[in-house]
Length: 184
Image (cartoon, rainbow, N blue to C red; front, side, top):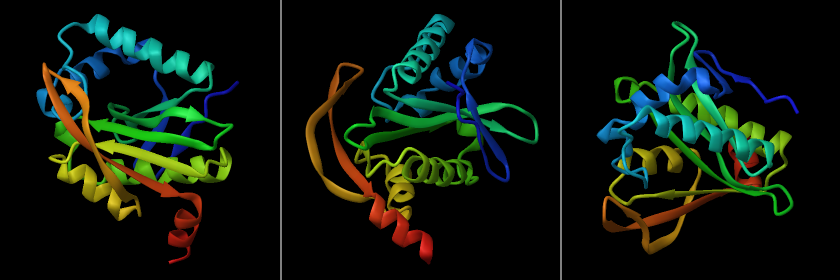
């Protein structure tokens, strides 16, 4: 089973391997990145190793696909984006992503998200893509709403992180809505 490599104008979405441990550790050890991520920030490179193993296992078990976002200009991995909780039978998944703070507000996630949504609805034939977002994470909420994701509700006490309980919004985008937005 060949990992699907996707490409945009500025980024290449590639399989994450153990060659990317340092990049992932750098990203996930940033407090800015993990603040709204739902997990504690990394303190050891071994945590990045385990995360990569999990991404690979999820892909092999057809339960997820996680791409590394690689900048074409310098071949650097600047974040990841992908599908969690993939259920091909039920035609649904949840989208997730994070980006190194040095690359925020440059449109890289938008570019990658456009490509992954196309792949998800057209190649995987998914019907629903959900997202779970901290209410305080306004940039992420704005990004998803720009792509047509609709808020479905507030999940109270949904995530525990750093010893605190957090509410999250749940959002979704359905295939007919995506197709409609592509006609504009």
